[in-house]
Amino acid sequence: MSQKIGIIGAGNVGGVLGTRWAKSGHTVVFGSRKPESEEIKILVSGAGATASNGTIAQAVSASDVLLLSTPWPAAEEALKSAGDLSGKILIDATNPVRPQLDGLLLGNMTSGGEQVAAWAPEAKVVKAFNTVGNNVMANPEFSAGKVAMFYCGDDAEAKRTVASLIGELGFDPLDAGPLTQARLLEPFALLWISLALKYGYSREIAFEFLRR
Image: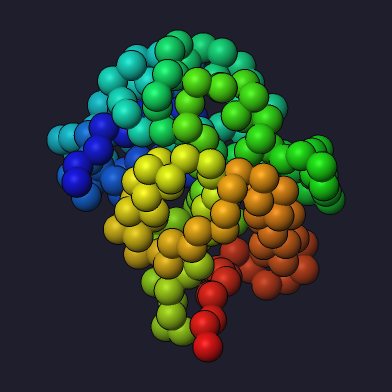
């Protein structure tokens, strides 16, 4: 089913996912603080005929599904500028990592996903697309099998929509439970970040979920 998708934060993650969804036939609006920048125009041109650019509020207004993919420090301000989020599915792809990438700014008793839900209480928040780098999002094909992509949230219908969007990009969508499970998915993301950027495994890594 074709979706109307708004991207809040058209950087590395938002640019990759928005482009892939647009090329799959979804209508995508890349929302940005600088919608007329040359960088955004190049991004939209490469995404194809179903993609366009606008402000964050314009992207939200035109869409039923939203991807929050800003850096964590910009997330609250971006949501404040988003306008009416009532009934929107909000995919939270952020991670509240410390600037030194040595820990999380939130954790244990809460999570970035829950904070996003507090900032956008009228939206249906689903945590997803936060546990691998944008390079893997651009090409999730590994010879060993499908890359695991966990998601969590409190609205069953919203989760089904997000699972479909995950699956069509070539990932193995795995329901991790309610939004409180973001307390586990965000440290899991930090494991990928530390292995990829600090401990020599490179960014060309991902996790597979094995069943028996």
